[in-house]
Length: 206
Image 1 (cartoon, rainbow, N blue to C red):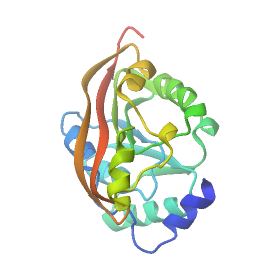
Image 2: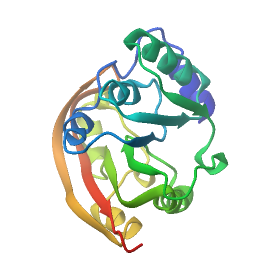
Image 3: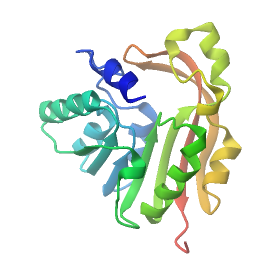
Image 4: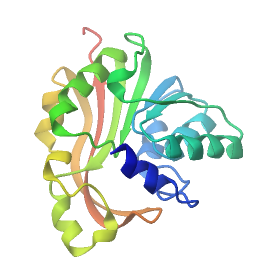
């Protein structure tokens, strides 16, 4: 996977664009800026946008090429982000550290996904928030009609609504729904697709 993403991000063009994900942009308006984490952040469009809005941004990815472009974008926009090259299981953040964890098209293999989400829960503050958008299992049907819409072709890399509930059993879901959306994010997210959008608050009692 590292080789795949390095090759994709080696393009001089920002392959998913420089503009933030629409759902993330709208969701951040609800919250006061604090510490936010972007796993699998790629070329940095969402991290840089959040930094411009006053957030203290941390990000990571396995792709060196993605990080280079993210740092260049941050310089271009005159903001600072902290961006590490690591797999999430290698990273050690303090317990209850982040106010928000933003998972935007962070598609992890199903055999390690539950472990990732347990760690997300550990490093999120009580009353912290998960902002999530990713392709749903239904998205495979959209890919057949339009390969340009992008997304994993392996159903096991996609998400279901019940799966999100299972990963975060003690969270309050302000929003959890599957939606058909029209994507226009660079050259690899173009057209109509099916996504799951979620805003979930961690219980203070946890």
